[in-house]
Length: 470
Ligand SMILES: Nc1ncnc2c1ncn2[C@@H]1O[C@H](COP(=O)(O)OP(=O)(O)OP(=O)(O)O)[C@@H](O)[C@H]1O
Ligand SMILES: [Mg+2]
Image (cartoon, rainbow, N blue to C red; front, side, top):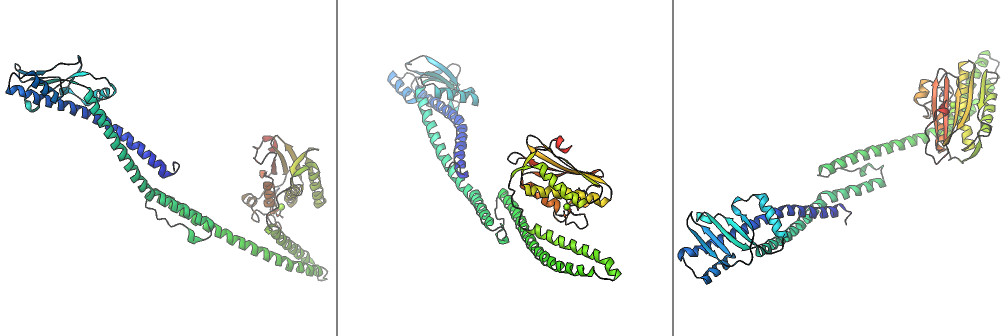
């Protein structure tokens, strides 16, 4: 209850109305005291008029008149000379004098509050202007206890009234908030749940209806979000269908091409010189086409399995990659060096790490061979507190613009004739599976460097240190 919007509003409203009532209470209690004293002055003035009829009244009547007016003494000055006076015995000396003719709001409030907080009964003198210009000045003495009692009475009535008002206000506000805010909010929440159950269904997208501006804005934003999401999901769906169609086509195409390969083998044996000249090119093209189909099929298979992490002797793994590459180089002038510390062990899936490093070294080799110039490839590794860093650098021509633009994007990053543009994308995915990163740290006329970072900890990536890049 207290955590709900309506509950909190209910409490806050009550508090605020109470505060407002207190602000009203202070001036009204001052006003009440002023009225009370003025009323006493008037009653005393009426009592004193009895003297006008009869100059000498007996003391019994005098006491009765004073008692009725609720005062001890009255002095009514009619002009400079004449004055009327009623008097009886005062129980104690006068404690204070209040002149009602020169009151301002601050003085009235101060006097009223100090009267409320001082409980002892005092005798005070009050002066004021007589009503109907019946004289110059009227002055009375009276007790404060009845005044204070009346003030307390009045205060309690105000407090009860404010409590009632605040409860009524709070309840009304509660009902209004429910209708204006809570119901629409609940509607939106219910709608969101409904949408989440089947986000591809465009019929479930919200239609904004709220009349409150802020809610309407939220609904509009939600509608846009849902529309975009539904569209993206459909797009993804179409791409998935397209992907599976491509897989099927690749599969059949590969079979067709494999039979074509068999025929071209025969053609190579032909005696015709033109055919003899063209045949190897035909074989090469068909082989590349088969390779493309196979890579597409391999990529189309479900995601790479998650790595099985063990401690791998990096040096051994690197040597194995290099041996394979040296075979492929043949007698081309290309040097591959290994700068991996002898006993360095990294935590990785050996099979996957092998594929990544082999991919990167092969790319470097292919790039250098394509230039026809001699070159070098260097495999290096380094470890710090947080991670293992492996770099593969070459003195090749650098990545072509297209490869840089679509770096790590399957199929699109390939700029090499006969390549399928998958090697880097797959490598990056495998390293991501290890919680690490594969980055292109340098490329240009002087060569290229890729850096692999494998974190040692729980997968939070360490900041790259200069040593690893150097
Ligand atoms: N070390 C490098 N030096 C120069 N260019 C490179 C290097 N590594 C990659 N490239 C460029 O980046 C492109 C993408 O490489 P990637 O390995 O993803 O695909 P690929 O080698 O073309 O095909 P495959 O899927 O058979 O590996 C390459 O075609 C090549 O142009
Ligand atoms: Mg490659």
